[in-house]
Image 1 (cartoon, one colour):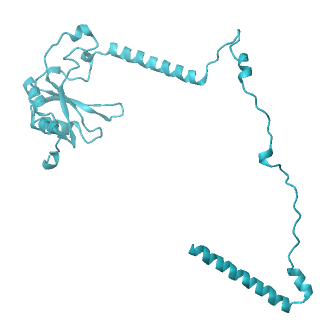
Image 2 (image 1 turned 90 degrees about the vertical axis):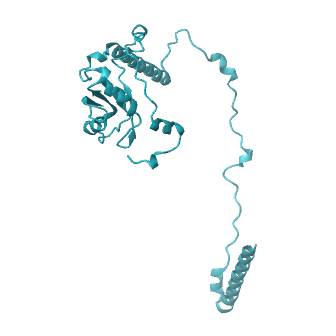
Image 3 (image 1 turned 45 degrees about the vertical axis):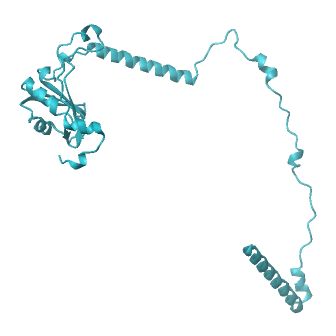
Length: 245
């Protein structure tokens, strides 16, 4: 409110100055020069070029109900595949090829014929949750598992580019050493990652996809005693900050 009042008085003051200036000029300037400062005459109003928007009348749009009887399929109509149908067809064909390829690989897969596998599956320990970078090497992994017994073979599985897939196989000299590692190595930290271990099941247990072979269990897995790390992990409390590895 104060700003509006101030603005009003400023405008009034400016107008007063203009009036005073014109009055002073009228006293000093001659009549020919005063004609130059005379206001222009008022322009005569002209009719608008465009009519009023409220008075416009556009074309009358008829409903489509009168033309529904023309819609339908002719006798010689040939359906053309739409873009959506084409995308769906290509997706189904791609999924079908993948399933056929996967089924073929499963039927041809035989873990007993793997050239890179360990010699004795009953002495082999499966280690997972390794770092997928180059920090964890076979040398460092062997150093961690030598505490459980003599190691005859150790292999970290890698892809074609030489990058680790995050799991490895450790073969011990004796089956008793495997049982010790299976019982005590669960939850160990290697390069900052908590690992999980298990016995090899690819060659010691038949595939569950074959109901005939899966009923023939060769050996029962070793019963692992619940370690202190497992009890702490299951309790939900963070004990790692109190420990040093």
